[in-house]
Image (cartoon, rainbow, N blue to C red):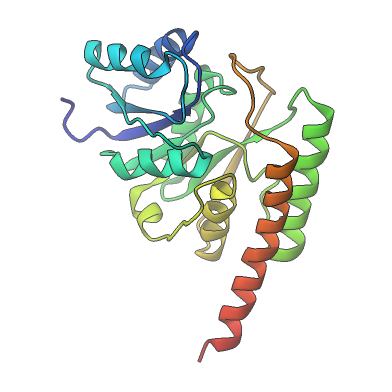
Length: 236
């Protein structure tokens, strides 16, 4: 077992059994080139295909790969499970279906140059007009109600220190995880650096984003705004 890896990268996945092996084989050399110690924590959640079996075999072959299996789905639930199991002092997570592993060294370099901060992706395109419009409205709502400055709240990879994450109380088990994380960073005045990345087609599988989940995200911004407003009224 790797002792105290510097970086823990969380990779939530669902029903990616047909290509998860090939995908992980790209993450490993990309991080190797960065010259750091690391672990990949793969979190299959609510999978109904062979994903768990494939990742389990890979974890037995390479000690840098770990697996945490969840019966229930949820983006936030999967990310949180991985982060809670992580051993690294630097934590990161990304959408495994839509991330090019080759971009990771640039995120690592930015983090090491800036010190205590949060480094994240800012997607320049999503290859889907409706997703572009929905994301723009979501980010505009977050700026208007919460004063957040990030242009792409949900862009991944995201990289930050264990110290920062443990200072938060992120409650979301769904798509609002990223909103809570960024809001926490901005309230703590943690520097945030956004790296522009080109759109990347899905490796496979289907997106879990639906109209109902999109509405839930819009409503989530308002819930967080009301919670902040209520806390400010009772502060002595």
